[in-house]
Image (cartoon, rainbow, N blue to C red):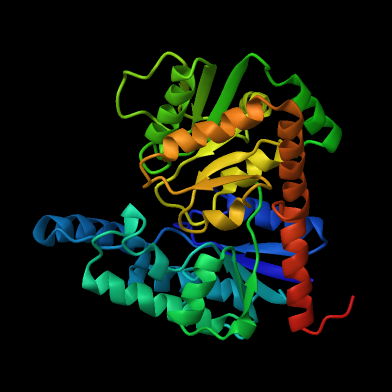
Length: 387
């Protein structure tokens, strides 16, 4: 079998440009299962720079958010280039991330895509989609409807996204397949390695980790508050925050911030793995999120997650299996988060069982091998390919 993965140069999932992100892991895993993969890409349209200026002017004049990634002429320009590649390709099917790369493709080849959210659920939920101008709103809704109609099967990572597809976009349920996302890590530890990580975690101090690129959005302040609550209760507690820059310099001494660790660089990957494997819990008190790849990554190391019950996070974290969910709008959520951490920190046997069930959740549901295998089975059945 052969597939073509449309990835415009402006697309953040482009596996040729972003080796550490989802597109590359999807492509690599399809290849691992014997699928030949061709990347359909395009140069950056000159129009993009025009619309970038247009976006700035729109904000200055109207104080509204023009969505550059939903600019129709830019998407059409990219799609025209990729459509030519598809026409000359012997690929059996097209597989993409989201509706944007496929909306304007001109092809008779079957199309499938995976995504973690719809525009409807992101609008006024994610700050990047706040205060959207009417023109962009109409464009975005049109693009979603076109993409959903073109795809033969749609793989959605959460019930949150599925309900939006069913109820808002009226997608037939026969098209939708509930499919989790996986851990974006090059290699995962074995069960024996995870057991060793658990055994070697400190019995004297609590080690916490938060991973994310947006300090405010991922709830770093909430994580610091949880860490402080543990200290106020008389425990030694340390927090690593990886991936984002703090908005101020007065970070508590027991909080260490590493603004960037690139998992494609061996030395930085080693540091990432060391910090994660030594952590007792990952904190994910995010303000908004469609799923949470970091939950998958933590689960791969047997690290349970304390997360916010928002967006699609409830599909990444199963209560009592690989973590716990809290509504951080509740006034006592910080205290309750600390309660859970201490309950398990002070009961090593219970903590070990929680860590092992966390790792099991990763091996059974939150890894790309399992996910791509499931999608490939659906695609083959849809194409009547007998193996």
